[in-house]
Length: 288
Image (cartoon, rainbow, N blue to C red):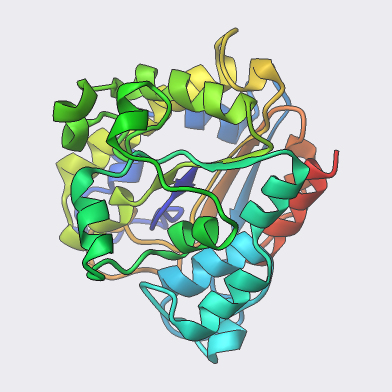
């Protein structure tokens, strides 16, 4: 599960607005962070700076997560939000979706609304690095039909933007669908991009509610007897840069980002220290 723009909160300055990351009720993430789960689990805080000054950006951060290549080096600095020709070449050369396809199948689990495909057909849509990486590996984008059959997951873990297509799936329904998808594929990604959007908008209530839905879904994935971990899936949650944890600014931050792993392959992430370490660890899990 990729959470766009979620950093580890630093010490709050006097008078700073509350952080939704701190305020949200997230018992599953808290348990993962404290190592209190029965399943093997790992918590790390990753450097998102990639050795460059300035604020980390989505295109370089996501490309690095998906390839293990320092995308900020390729761009001579942080770049975003969407990958241009240079980063697309990096993603084309090999990303985790390619690895997943070779290991037995890959899936981008997001259910995209009809308007997304209309914009794509009209060439008004610039995909983020996650969506581009999937397309580069021949992994299809899913829409309303798959959502109505419970075969794709809403990015808000609720289904508000797809209610006309099949009703609201909600966090539990989203988690059940995601667990089934992940159990059937070697590599599955759910791109939760709204966290970054809420950070830029400094939308405390929306961000807090979304983080609580994320946690509710994770509770099923990692602790339920019918969840993903119980089916032998390694669950990974991480981000590309900080943002929503500090609503005192409407920009990204240089805070580290969290990494949570649970399941049979969690130990592969014990040594992760930066965004560069995520793809090699995922590849070791895929290799068995």
